[in-house]
Length: 77
Image 1: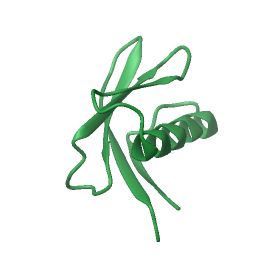
Image 2: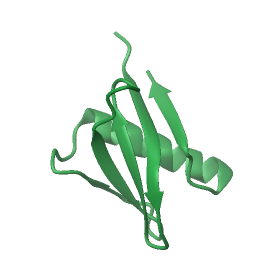
Image 3: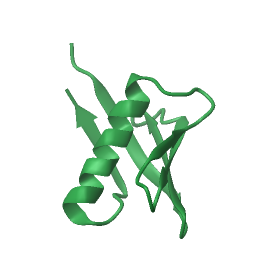
Image 4: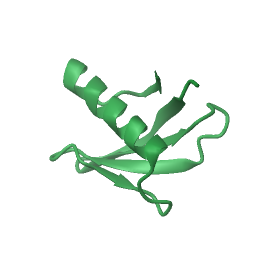
């Protein structure tokens, strides 16, 4: 069974980058915040789960490849 997660940058400031994410591009209702200095993700009130981990790992990987925070993306496995 395939697993998909989509994400989109909502905002960015000098300390953090906020993303919405979800299993469907039309229903990205959850949020995560990436710390710009440590590159560590912080979950929304729903906490850490598989979709959160999948989205945050993909965002961090894209940042490491391009040295910039991605505007949007997806991960499939």
